[in-house]
Amino acid sequence: MNVLITGADGFIGSHLTELLVAEGYTVKALSQYNSFNNWGWLENVGCRKEIEVLSGDVRDPHYCKHITENIDVVFNLAALIAIPYSYVAPDSYVDTNIKGTLNICQAALENGVGRVIHTSTSEVYGTAQYVPIDEKHPLQAQSPYSASKIGADAMAMSFFNSFGLPLTIARPFNTYGPRQSARAVIPTIITQIASGMKQIKLGDTTPTRDFNYVADTCRGFLQLARCEQAIGEVVNIGSNYEISVADTLNLIRELMGSDVEFLTDEQRIRPEKSEVFRLWCDNTKIRGLTGFEPEYSIRDGLQKTIDWLVQPENLAKYKADIYNV
Ligand SMILES: NC(=O)c1ccc[n+]([C@@H]2O[C@H](COP(=O)([O-])OP(=O)(O)OC[C@H]3O[C@@H](n4cnc5c(N)ncnc54)[C@H](O)[C@@H]3O)[C@@H](O)[C@H]2O)c1
Image (cartoon, rainbow, N blue to C red):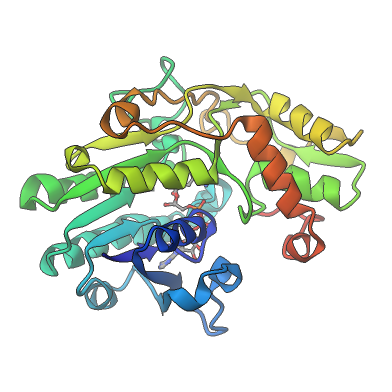
Protein backbone atom coordinates (compact mmCIF):
# COMPACT_ATOMS: atom_id res chain seq x y z
CA MET A 1 0.00 0.00 0.00
CA ASN A 2 1.34 3.41 -1.00
CA VAL A 3 0.42 6.15 1.44
CA LEU A 4 0.96 9.89 1.41
CA ILE A 5 1.11 11.76 4.72
CA THR A 6 0.86 15.54 4.53
CA GLY A 7 2.15 17.35 7.60
CA ALA A 8 4.57 14.44 8.10
CA ASP A 9 7.25 16.91 9.18
CA GLY A 10 5.12 17.86 12.20
CA PHE A 11 4.41 16.38 15.60
CA ILE A 12 1.60 13.89 14.93
CA GLY A 13 2.61 13.35 11.29
CA SER A 14 6.13 12.21 12.18
CA HIS A 15 4.75 9.62 14.65
CA LEU A 16 2.19 8.47 12.09
CA THR A 17 5.00 8.09 9.55
CA GLU A 18 6.88 5.82 11.94
CA LEU A 19 3.77 3.77 12.72
CA LEU A 20 2.87 3.25 9.06
CA VAL A 21 6.42 2.23 8.14
CA ALA A 22 6.40 -0.26 11.03
CA GLU A 23 3.08 -1.61 9.71
CA GLY A 24 4.63 -2.24 6.29
CA TYR A 25 3.24 0.67 4.28
CA THR A 26 5.31 2.45 1.62
CA VAL A 27 5.29 6.04 2.84
CA LYS A 28 5.67 9.31 0.97
CA ALA A 29 6.06 11.95 3.66
CA LEU A 30 5.32 15.57 2.77
CA SER A 31 7.40 18.21 4.51
CA GLN A 32 6.57 21.87 3.92
CA TYR A 33 8.97 23.34 1.36
CA ASN A 34 11.57 25.75 2.74
CA SER A 35 14.87 26.98 1.38
CA PHE A 36 16.85 25.30 4.18
CA ASN A 37 15.62 21.88 3.00
CA ASN A 38 14.70 21.29 6.63
CA TRP A 39 12.37 18.30 7.03
CA GLY A 40 11.19 19.19 10.51
CA TRP A 41 10.79 16.17 12.79
CA LEU A 42 11.41 13.82 9.87
CA GLU A 43 15.08 14.70 10.32
CA ASN A 44 14.97 12.68 13.55
CA VAL A 45 12.85 9.64 12.73
CA GLY A 46 14.56 6.25 12.79
CA CYS A 47 12.84 5.23 9.55
CA ARG A 48 14.22 8.15 7.51
CA LYS A 49 15.92 5.89 4.98
CA GLU A 50 12.75 3.85 4.50
CA ILE A 51 10.53 6.77 3.46
CA GLU A 52 10.45 9.15 0.52
CA VAL A 53 10.46 12.71 1.80
CA LEU A 54 8.77 15.24 -0.47
CA SER A 55 9.21 18.98 -0.02
CA GLY A 56 6.22 21.00 -1.12
CA ASP A 57 3.09 22.87 -0.20
CA VAL A 58 -0.58 21.87 0.03
CA ARG A 59 -1.54 25.39 -1.04
CA ASP A 60 -0.42 24.54 -4.57
CA PRO A 61 -3.03 22.50 -6.52
CA HIS A 62 -0.52 21.50 -9.22
CA TYR A 63 1.82 20.12 -6.62
CA CYS A 64 -1.00 18.21 -4.87
CA LYS A 65 -2.01 16.62 -8.17
CA HIS A 66 1.58 15.50 -8.68
CA ILE A 67 2.11 13.91 -5.24
CA THR A 68 -1.17 11.98 -5.12
CA GLU A 69 -0.40 9.94 -8.26
CA ASN A 70 -0.34 6.17 -7.54
CA ILE A 71 -1.31 6.67 -3.90
CA ASP A 72 -3.73 4.30 -2.16
CA VAL A 73 -4.32 6.29 1.04
CA VAL A 74 -3.79 9.96 1.86
CA PHE A 75 -3.55 11.11 5.47
CA ASN A 76 -4.03 14.87 5.36
CA LEU A 77 -2.48 16.40 8.48
CA ALA A 78 -0.85 19.51 7.00
CA ALA A 79 -2.25 22.57 8.75
CA LEU A 80 -1.52 25.73 10.63
CA ILE A 81 -2.63 24.85 14.13
CA ALA A 82 -1.64 27.50 16.70
CA ILE A 83 -4.65 29.40 18.04
CA PRO A 84 -2.77 32.62 19.04
CA TYR A 85 -1.13 32.85 15.61
CA SER A 86 -4.58 32.47 14.02
CA TYR A 87 -5.62 35.71 15.79
CA VAL A 88 -2.98 37.68 13.85
CA ALA A 89 -2.67 35.73 10.57
CA PRO A 90 -6.12 34.27 9.83
CA ASP A 91 -5.78 34.56 6.06
CA SER A 92 -2.96 32.05 6.03
CA TYR A 93 -5.19 29.62 7.97
CA VAL A 94 -7.81 29.83 5.23
CA ASP A 95 -5.14 29.25 2.58
CA THR A 96 -3.47 26.28 4.28
CA ASN A 97 -6.33 24.61 6.10
CA ILE A 98 -9.32 25.17 3.79
CA LYS A 99 -7.68 25.70 0.42
CA GLY A 100 -5.04 23.06 1.17
CA THR A 101 -7.76 20.54 2.00
CA LEU A 102 -9.62 21.42 -1.20
CA ASN A 103 -6.42 20.87 -3.19
CA ILE A 104 -5.74 17.49 -1.58
CA CYS A 105 -9.35 16.31 -2.05
CA GLN A 106 -9.50 17.49 -5.68
CA ALA A 107 -6.15 15.87 -6.46
CA ALA A 108 -7.14 12.63 -4.69
CA LEU A 109 -10.37 12.51 -6.68
CA GLU A 110 -8.66 13.14 -10.03
CA ASN A 111 -5.99 10.51 -9.30
CA GLY A 112 -8.45 7.87 -8.06
CA VAL A 113 -6.93 7.66 -4.55
CA GLY A 114 -8.62 4.80 -2.68
CA ARG A 115 -8.99 6.51 0.67
CA VAL A 116 -8.53 9.93 2.26
CA ILE A 117 -8.26 10.43 6.01
CA HIS A 118 -8.71 14.13 6.64
CA THR A 119 -7.68 15.52 10.04
CA SER A 120 -10.10 17.66 12.00
CA THR A 121 -9.74 18.75 15.64
CA SER A 122 -11.85 18.84 18.79
CA GLU A 123 -11.39 22.65 18.70
CA VAL A 124 -14.25 22.73 16.15
CA TYR A 125 -16.70 21.86 18.97
CA GLY A 126 -15.73 24.84 21.11
CA THR A 127 -16.64 24.78 24.81
CA ALA A 128 -18.73 21.67 25.50
CA GLN A 129 -22.49 22.28 25.56
CA TYR A 130 -22.78 18.75 26.96
CA VAL A 131 -20.29 16.05 27.91
CA PRO A 132 -18.90 13.79 26.75
CA ILE A 133 -18.82 15.39 23.28
CA ASP A 134 -20.07 13.10 20.53
CA GLU A 135 -19.90 13.79 16.79
CA LYS A 136 -23.39 15.37 16.83
CA HIS A 137 -22.26 18.20 19.13
CA PRO A 138 -22.73 21.65 17.51
CA LEU A 139 -19.65 23.26 15.94
CA GLN A 140 -18.62 26.63 17.38
CA ALA A 141 -15.92 28.74 15.76
CA GLN A 142 -14.30 30.25 18.86
CA SER A 143 -11.05 31.08 17.02
CA PRO A 144 -10.00 31.64 13.41
CA TYR A 145 -8.13 28.31 13.71
CA SER A 146 -11.33 26.51 14.65
CA ALA A 147 -13.22 28.33 11.88
CA SER A 148 -10.65 27.24 9.31
CA LYS A 149 -10.87 23.61 10.44
CA ILE A 150 -14.69 23.73 10.34
CA GLY A 151 -14.34 25.03 6.77
CA ALA A 152 -11.78 22.35 5.91
CA ASP A 153 -13.98 19.58 7.30
CA ALA A 154 -16.99 20.86 5.35
CA MET A 155 -14.95 21.03 2.16
CA ALA A 156 -13.67 17.49 2.69
CA MET A 157 -17.14 16.10 3.44
CA SER A 158 -18.55 17.85 0.36
CA PHE A 159 -16.19 15.73 -1.76
CA PHE A 160 -17.69 12.58 -0.26
CA ASN A 161 -21.24 13.84 -0.73
CA SER A 162 -20.80 15.37 -4.18
CA PHE A 163 -18.27 13.07 -5.84
CA GLY A 164 -18.12 9.92 -3.73
CA LEU A 165 -14.51 10.51 -2.63
CA PRO A 166 -13.91 7.69 -0.09
CA LEU A 167 -13.12 9.94 2.82
CA THR A 168 -13.19 9.85 6.61
CA ILE A 169 -12.85 12.85 8.89
CA ALA A 170 -10.72 11.89 11.90
CA ARG A 171 -11.33 14.31 14.75
CA PRO A 172 -8.60 13.96 17.39
CA PHE A 173 -8.89 15.56 20.81
CA ASN A 174 -5.80 17.22 22.35
CA THR A 175 -2.74 15.12 21.66
CA TYR A 176 0.62 15.29 23.42
CA GLY A 177 3.93 13.45 23.38
CA PRO A 178 7.52 13.69 22.16
CA ARG A 179 8.10 16.32 19.42
CA GLN A 180 5.03 18.43 20.18
CA SER A 181 5.73 22.09 19.54
CA ALA A 182 6.26 24.37 22.53
CA ARG A 183 3.12 26.40 21.73
CA ALA A 184 1.16 23.63 23.52
CA VAL A 185 0.84 23.64 27.30
CA ILE A 186 2.39 20.25 28.16
CA PRO A 187 5.74 20.73 26.36
CA THR A 188 5.82 24.35 27.55
CA ILE A 189 5.74 23.24 31.17
CA ILE A 190 8.07 20.28 30.86
CA THR A 191 10.73 22.23 28.93
CA GLN A 192 10.65 25.11 31.42
CA ILE A 193 10.99 22.78 34.40
CA ALA A 194 13.74 20.83 32.61
CA SER A 195 15.56 24.13 31.93
CA GLY A 196 15.67 24.81 35.65
CA MET A 197 13.09 27.61 35.83
CA LYS A 198 11.59 28.17 39.26
CA GLN A 199 8.53 30.06 38.05
CA ILE A 200 6.42 29.21 35.01
CA LYS A 201 4.10 31.65 33.25
CA LEU A 202 0.81 30.27 31.98
CA GLY A 203 -2.60 31.33 30.69
CA ASP A 204 -5.87 30.14 32.25
CA THR A 205 -5.41 26.73 33.92
CA THR A 206 -9.09 26.04 34.68
CA PRO A 207 -10.07 24.63 31.24
CA THR A 208 -10.35 20.86 30.96
CA ARG A 209 -9.07 18.67 28.13
CA ASP A 210 -9.22 15.05 26.98
CA PHE A 211 -5.45 14.60 26.56
CA ASN A 212 -4.28 11.71 24.38
CA TYR A 213 -0.82 10.26 24.04
CA VAL A 214 0.33 10.57 20.43
CA ALA A 215 0.76 6.81 19.90
CA ASP A 216 -2.93 6.33 20.74
CA THR A 217 -4.00 9.10 18.35
CA CYS A 218 -1.92 7.58 15.54
CA ARG A 219 -3.41 4.13 16.11
CA GLY A 220 -6.81 5.75 15.84
CA PHE A 221 -5.85 7.16 12.42
CA LEU A 222 -4.63 3.76 11.23
CA GLN A 223 -7.70 1.92 12.48
CA LEU A 224 -9.98 4.40 10.71
CA ALA A 225 -8.02 3.98 7.46
CA ARG A 226 -8.61 0.23 7.68
CA CYS A 227 -12.33 0.56 8.40
CA GLU A 228 -14.68 0.59 5.38
CA GLN A 229 -17.68 1.56 7.53
CA ALA A 230 -15.92 4.79 8.48
CA ILE A 231 -16.16 6.12 4.89
CA GLY A 232 -18.32 9.24 4.83
CA GLU A 233 -18.16 9.54 8.63
CA VAL A 234 -16.76 12.06 11.11
CA VAL A 235 -15.12 10.12 13.95
CA ASN A 236 -13.73 11.41 17.25
CA ILE A 237 -10.39 10.07 18.48
CA GLY A 238 -10.10 10.48 22.25
CA SER A 239 -9.92 8.76 25.60
CA ASN A 240 -13.30 9.67 27.17
CA TYR A 241 -12.11 11.57 30.23
CA GLU A 242 -11.32 15.12 31.24
CA ILE A 243 -8.58 16.66 33.34
CA SER A 244 -8.02 20.34 34.07
CA VAL A 245 -4.88 22.03 32.86
CA ALA A 246 -4.10 22.82 36.52
CA ASP A 247 -4.29 19.13 37.51
CA THR A 248 -2.14 18.23 34.51
CA LEU A 249 0.48 20.75 35.65
CA ASN A 250 0.49 19.36 39.15
CA LEU A 251 0.94 15.85 37.80
CA ILE A 252 3.90 16.97 35.66
CA ARG A 253 5.40 18.73 38.68
CA GLU A 254 5.04 15.54 40.74
CA LEU A 255 6.47 13.28 38.00
CA MET A 256 9.46 15.62 37.56
CA GLY A 257 10.02 15.99 41.32
CA SER A 258 9.83 19.78 40.94
CA ASP A 259 8.67 22.54 43.30
CA VAL A 260 8.16 25.04 40.47
CA GLU A 261 5.64 27.84 40.99
CA PHE A 262 2.95 28.63 38.40
CA LEU A 263 2.17 32.28 37.58
CA THR A 264 -0.54 33.76 35.37
CA ASP A 265 0.71 35.65 32.33
CA GLU A 266 -1.86 38.11 30.90
CA GLN A 267 -0.31 37.74 27.45
CA ARG A 268 -1.38 34.10 27.43
CA ILE A 269 -4.98 34.66 28.54
CA ARG A 270 -7.33 34.29 25.58
CA PRO A 271 -10.35 36.51 24.97
CA GLU A 272 -13.14 35.00 27.07
CA LYS A 273 -15.40 34.01 24.18
CA SER A 274 -12.43 32.47 22.38
CA GLU A 275 -11.22 30.26 25.25
CA VAL A 276 -12.51 26.69 24.96
CA PHE A 277 -13.29 25.82 28.58
CA ARG A 278 -14.22 22.18 28.34
CA LEU A 279 -13.37 19.30 25.97
CA TRP A 280 -14.18 15.69 26.82
CA CYS A 281 -14.42 13.09 24.08
CA ASP A 282 -17.22 10.59 23.62
CA ASN A 283 -15.27 7.84 21.82
CA THR A 284 -18.21 5.43 21.48
CA LYS A 285 -18.22 5.74 17.68
CA ILE A 286 -14.57 4.85 17.05
CA ARG A 287 -14.74 2.04 19.58
CA GLY A 288 -17.79 0.61 17.84
CA LEU A 289 -16.32 0.99 14.34
CA THR A 290 -12.77 -0.20 14.98
CA GLY A 291 -12.45 -1.58 18.52
CA PHE A 292 -10.15 1.37 19.36
CA GLU A 293 -9.02 1.53 23.00
CA PRO A 294 -6.49 4.09 24.25
CA GLU A 295 -3.48 2.30 25.74
CA TYR A 296 -1.78 5.10 27.67
CA SER A 297 -3.00 6.62 30.92
CA ILE A 298 -2.21 10.33 31.34
CA ARG A 299 0.44 9.41 33.92
CA ASP A 300 2.19 6.92 31.60
CA GLY A 301 1.96 9.22 28.59
CA LEU A 302 3.32 12.20 30.51
CA GLN A 303 6.20 10.10 31.85
CA LYS A 304 7.19 9.09 28.31
CA THR A 305 6.93 12.70 27.17
CA ILE A 306 9.07 13.91 30.08
CA ASP A 307 11.66 11.18 29.46
CA TRP A 308 12.02 12.37 25.87
CA LEU A 309 11.98 16.11 26.53
CA VAL A 310 14.61 16.06 29.28
CA GLN A 311 17.19 14.53 26.93
CA PRO A 312 19.62 17.44 26.29
CA GLU A 313 19.61 16.92 22.50
CA ASN A 314 15.79 17.14 22.46
CA LEU A 315 15.52 20.00 24.97
CA ALA A 316 18.00 21.98 22.85
CA LYS A 317 15.39 22.13 20.06
CA TYR A 318 12.99 24.11 22.28
CA LYS A 319 13.08 27.80 23.26
CA ALA A 320 11.98 27.38 26.87
CA ASP A 321 12.77 31.00 27.80
CA ILE A 322 10.19 32.67 25.49
CA TYR A 323 6.45 32.55 24.81
CA ASN A 324 6.19 30.27 21.78
CA VAL A 325 3.21 31.04 19.55
N1 LIG B 1 -1.73 18.51 18.35
C1 LIG B 1 -3.00 18.38 18.69
O1 LIG B 1 -3.34 18.37 19.89
C2 LIG B 1 -4.06 18.20 17.63
C3 LIG B 1 -5.35 17.90 18.06
C4 LIG B 1 -6.35 17.73 17.12
C5 LIG B 1 -6.05 17.85 15.78
N2 LIG B 1 -4.78 18.16 15.36
C6 LIG B 1 -4.53 18.25 13.93
O2 LIG B 1 -3.52 17.32 13.60
C7 LIG B 1 -2.76 17.80 12.51
C8 LIG B 1 -1.29 17.81 12.87
O3 LIG B 1 -1.09 18.67 13.99
P1 LIG B 1 0.28 18.71 14.81
O4 LIG B 1 -0.07 18.88 16.24
O5 LIG B 1 1.14 17.57 14.41
O6 LIG B 1 0.87 20.11 14.31
P2 LIG B 1 2.26 20.48 13.63
O7 LIG B 1 2.27 21.96 13.47
O8 LIG B 1 3.38 19.84 14.36
O9 LIG B 1 2.14 19.77 12.20
C9 LIG B 1 1.52 20.36 11.10
C10 LIG B 1 2.49 20.30 9.93
O10 LIG B 1 1.87 20.84 8.75
C11 LIG B 1 2.88 21.42 7.98
N3 LIG B 1 2.33 22.44 7.10
C12 LIG B 1 1.85 23.67 7.46
N4 LIG B 1 1.49 24.36 6.38
C13 LIG B 1 1.77 23.57 5.30
C14 LIG B 1 1.63 23.74 3.91
N5 LIG B 1 1.12 24.87 3.40
N6 LIG B 1 1.99 22.73 3.09
C15 LIG B 1 2.52 21.59 3.59
N7 LIG B 1 2.68 21.37 4.90
C16 LIG B 1 2.31 22.35 5.75
C17 LIG B 1 3.86 22.05 8.97
O11 LIG B 1 5.16 22.08 8.41
C18 LIG B 1 3.73 21.16 10.19
O12 LIG B 1 4.85 20.34 10.38
C19 LIG B 1 -3.33 19.19 12.17
O13 LIG B 1 -4.22 19.04 11.09
C20 LIG B 1 -4.06 19.60 13.42
O14 LIG B 1 -5.11 20.48 13.13
C21 LIG B 1 -3.78 18.34 16.27
